[in-house]
Length: 509
Image (cartoon, rainbow, N blue to C red):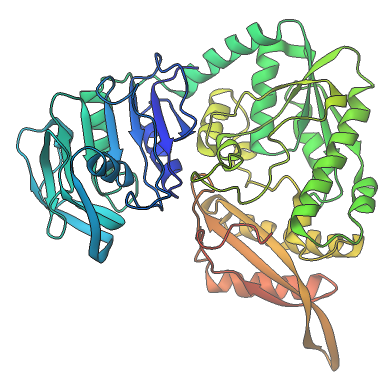
């Protein structure tokens, strides 16, 4: 894989967004924790320092080793990075009188600076910091100011080092992408050659070389990630790829058979394994969300191990791991904390003795879809909403029973089919229903009921890192609520979740 831009993570919620903006410029980039910088930097063309919830004045301030970077490679320091360079290189950083957070406008831009090519004065930028640079570091020159922040941007003479106190990666910085492009393309001269076609060609060649004539087993989920991984691998090794689609009993209604039917015409070597009773038996009585995830991960591996033993000489396990899974599974002091465990990241039990291959581990979700389109995969399959690996288990709050699964499958089916029939499905990034651990009083006919409450969830997003709730039409919500209550036995109340991520997550568990 081409290594063009290195992004150092100091724990900011925006770090992944920097990577997404860089990728949108057709430039490949990678995120590493600030304290795990790659030892070999020869293949990188530029480095970006991200923001951080920490203060450079604090005792716990993250300290990156920039000895092999600063002055030797083009460097862009964002927010915390800009304050770090100032504070530890002869400048001064102090607490702001008021927290500088939100929209601001550039009131001064130094003329003739390539970094600001195509950016006009009064351009809106997004601030998010409680400290402010009061004096520039040694050999620094002011490049831009806002009405409240004198040193909004600066560069260090004698180096290709630029620093900005605002976040160019967020939507609210109207010319932020242009500034990133100016730095990466015009100043650092990074090639813009990261395209879906280039990725497919490079990855297929890499897989052929890595796997040779080895046999590979892959767990298909019916989702976008595992499907694109399967087609990529099939393109590289053909019939040496053995796909297994496991029904964990927590799929959507009729999904097991529907997905198997979908794969029939794709030339993939697929075997369906119905292990629903085994999973539900292991999950009986478990209410803790993390325990549910780990139980499902364990049983999935056990089922997979049983099935792989039926195949001869399989040496590799392929997984549809994507980049957000990798990022969220890194947990070190400072950088992005692990929010939930991912059972498809981090290896296998020793007894399986299979090596792992993850062809999509460096791609974001939207990039996976573009690669899938390049591979000629059916747009309907590529347009499927993301579905959690643990399935409906984390949408059933509390313990899991076959009856609760039945209720939620029926509710989910009414909701999803309703979105499709109203032409709303493709306008939503992810939708689903949650079965709440409470009953509510209702009236049906002349009878009093005491039945389940379900919450509907629909969000718009690009890669799931951040998400906003979707303003679904009231007429649709009224119709789908009535349909659920009338058609699904055991439910008498429907609510709609209007929380965004952050602070809420997309899933409830």
